[in-house]
Length: 312
Image (cartoon, rainbow, N blue to C red; front, side, top):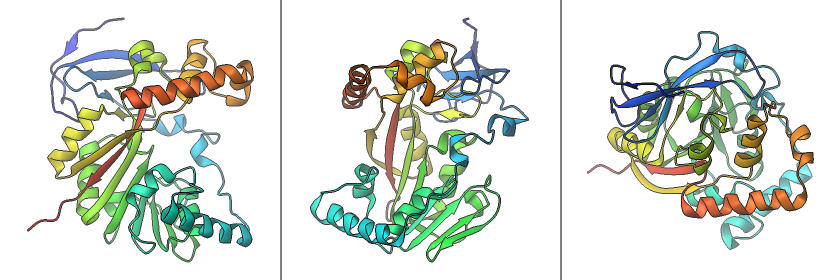
């Protein structure tokens, strides 16, 4: 259903344009009731929910994936992880699953790292097991402050309440859950050391699957995703805050295709029920298509590497 352009709202949260059009989206992951109005910027293409539901917590049930338990490794396996990390960083072999971005942001094992929207802290645990020594996670939705061992602390608070500064600040698919992107970027800028890196991984509206499927796009994820930028939109906002955007790397996967097809079939997002319907050949075709979309700049998620310039 087409709706008139909204020129009276607060404007796009990324580029500031008042030229937006509205569309209706539903919660599809768990098939929960409700309709939600989103605004699409006609200038930069970014998306934002018009008004988040007052009871947003109900859309994060216990089975939501970020609430899974921390998986610890035995000590012998952590020794192997340290060896693997050194081989990866020094020789480029035995890369971990997150190696494509870690290799670009690694400075030294003592660099101070913050994970914003850390969830259960699994990524920080893996980094610590691999040799990193100064790690902090921030998430207002965890139950309490936690220590996961020497060198890892999780804080039940938003990042603007963090103490100290960091060499690397990361947001792995948490940025899109935050209502005010300018505020979180300003907090990151203030708490990032000069020359440090801000890494943001999130869905982007440059996605071909968004253009083709619209409200069925699996990473629209209404109403949990309060904002979804375009590459240009996030670049504009980052530059306005003071960051320098060094690189954008598309890192989408086959999830964009089979997840979106599930929503078109009115199915909840349950991989154990969805994936068996596809042959190995079909899933491989999805993977190859995702790689091609990434190379062409039309994948449905991207990794942004911002730096805080040194000031004279």
